[in-house]
Image: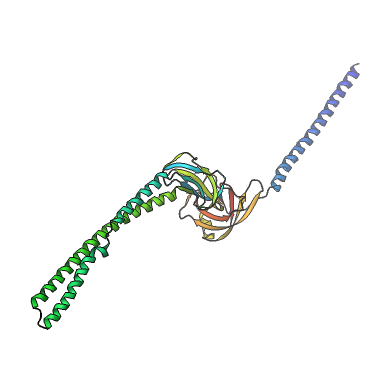
Length: 326
C-alpha cells in the first residue's frame, strides 16, 4: 500500500509536471502568435497607407461678397436661396419704389415750371433792334441831305445820339436777359441733378448679384423692411478658388508671383484630386503658424501666407483641406 501510494503520488506529480510543461508550451506559442499578429497589424496598414509629400498645407477660400441694401424700403420680392447659382448683374429681387417714383414726378413738374420762365431773348430785344435799324436808315438819309445842304448838322447829331442810346439799352437788356437765363439754367440743372439722384436710387432698388457665383447665405426675406447697409445675402465665386497655404522662411526663395504649382484637394483617406495652380499673392509679413495648419518644418513658428488660384471643377468646396507642391 505504501509503495503504491508513493507511485501514485509520483505519477500525480509527473502528470502535473507534464501538464504544466504542456500548458507552458501552449502559452509560449500563443504569446509569439500575438506578437506576430501585432507586428503584422502595424506593418500592413502602414504599407497600405500612402505617404503624401507636400511643401505646404492650407484651406480653400473663395472671393465672397456680402450684398447689402443701398436704399430703404420694403422688399417686394427676393428670389434667393442658399446654394443657388447666380450670374453677375442678375436681378434677384426688388425694393419698393413708389415714393421714389412720386418724388421724381414732382421734380419733373418743377423743372418744367422753371424752364417756362426762361426768357426768349430774340423776342425781348426785337423791338429795340427794329428801332436801331430805323435810326440807322435815318442817319443815312440825313447824311445825304447834309451833303446837299438840305439838312443841318444838329439833325445828324440827334440821329446819332438816338442810335447810341438805343444800342446802350439793347446791351443792358441783353445782359439782364442773360442773367435771367443763367439763373433759370442753374435752377434747372439743380433739379436735373436731383432727378439723376432719384434715378440712381431707383436703379439700386433692383437687388442684383455683383459677381457670378453661388449664394452662401441669405439674411432677409420678401416683405421685410430693408434699410441702407442692411446685408441681404452673401455670394461667392466658386469657379475660381484660392488655397491659402503657409510657407516657412526658407521656402520663400522657391516661390514667386505667377509661378505654376500643383495643388491637391484632400477628400479624406487616399482620395485626392490634383489641380494646376498659380501663386497669386504672397504675404509681406510673417505670422504664427495657425493651429489647424501643418508646416513642412514643424520647428518653424513663423510662416508666410500665400494664395494659390485654381480653376474649380465643382468638386472642391470652401474650407476643404489642401496641399501645395512646388
